[in-house]
Amino acid sequence: MSELSFPITCSAAMLLAVARLALVPAICTAQVQATQAKATQAQTGRPHVVVLLADDMGWGDPQCYQGDSKIPTPNLDRLAAAGIRFRDAHTPSSVCTPTRYTLLTGRYCWRTSLKKGVLDGFAPPLIQSGEDTLASMLKRRGYRTACIGKWHLGMQWHDKDGNPVERRGVGVRFRPGDGIDFRRDVTGGPMDVGFDSFFGISASLDMAPYVYIRDRRVETLPTERHQELDGTIFLNGVSGVKSPGFDIHGVLPRLGDEAVNVIQSHASRDQPLFLYMPLNSPHLPIAPSNSAKGKSHAGDYGDFVWQTDQVVGRVLDALDTAGMTDNTLVVFTSDNGGLWHWWDFRADDDGGKAPITPRGQYVKDFSHQSNAHWRGTKADIYEGGHRVPFIVRWPARVKAGQVSDELVELTDIFATVSEITNSDPRGESGMDSFSFLPVLEGNQKPTRPFAVHHSVSGIFALRQGNWKLIEGRGSGGFTRPKHARNFSDNVPGQLYDLDADPGEQKNQWLNESETVRSMKVTLERIRTRRNG
Image 1 (tube, rainbow, N blue to C red):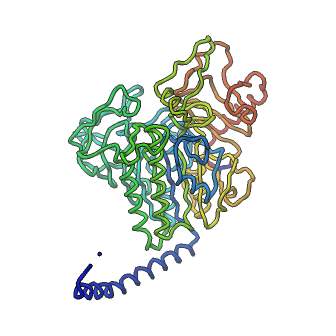
Image 2: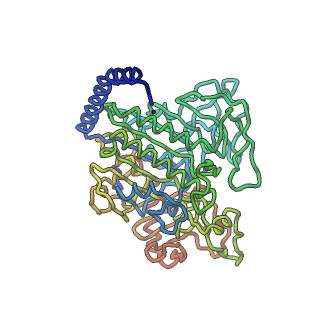
Image 3: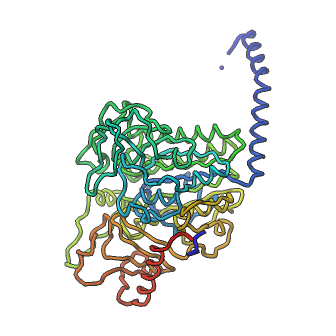
């Protein structure tokens, strides 16, 4: 699409038999309807589409990606075995809000007003009125569209005086939600960008409000308060308003329940389904349910990843039960790289060493690297920040057991679904998206000529072939050293040959001046282009 192209009595038994006979016509009718619906849907050529988006799951968490993973992930493993697993897949950003925007619109988030960082739970909508999304595009093609999970793309809240809440200022902490009128409809969210229904939370569980939202209404008014727990690396959510009974440990199971309900209710329908399920896990706060404790060999974090895998399994099982598996395109991925990663001490240019963080020590104690051998973490411009698991299953058209090294971005889900469903996007939506349908169908010819990466602080990187150019020094994220000021060698950027140096250890900036010049020109062309 883009140009950068039980014993009972006898009488009781008789009554039961009569009741069963009475049910036979209804059961048969339902079965016939379901069969007709499946046949009609199959004839349209439009598959069901299910997008499952984990939150902060690293490339090395699923065992199908890293055999040394300390976390059992049987459902992701079976998904990969039945489809295609991409090893060179990337998020457009190394943090969540911009990746979510780009996934749904096919347009890089840095083209919007959000140039760095993420939104909080009370931010106004990032997707503007009139922007096309996967949901609105598919809705025009007759799809039922449902969103279940963590939105984190802004909604329009109002204070008790009726004023719309504005975006928080730079450097302002996540807001607690005091003064918000929770009796009003919340607009500008999923229901206003193409989704027929929504259930979930406005943002991450380390920020308020701690409430469930159904469609445009808060399900239970928040009359309590979630207290911030300092001194822990697992529960660090800000203090804020909370609905009675809202428990962070119960969010993931609740989302699973809602997703299963959507699929079950759709089994007899004669229209295709688009289910977008952005999960809250395994993002902080690390909050596995009691039933998940001890299921991994990587502590609470590993248990939370295991529980995430179980929710994926529930969705897959629901598709099986509904008879929808064969013609359902399932995509599983993550919104950025993992946070639970430890990198060896690295000297900065003054000879010092970055101190190991509590998170890093935690990872060392369990010998589990969320991002496997890739450098860096979530938020970083390095591979660990944006290289993610990416699995696609579509039994009707995609051969099982494939592994692909083709370059893809989450950005490309938009163009791929558009091509599969013969849908036309509107406006600038889809302008940065390339369809990888040929790869799904077995054509290993590259479909994406480049990839653009973006760190939490707004540092850009360009990937072309084996080369990766980074505009600036440091990680631009959480890993030290973070910024150019940590270096005194006057080298302005970074260039790595990922084939020879996948760990991004040897900066080739000074040695490959022509490559640097050419890639800088290409990156600037990408940044300044308009749709068409």
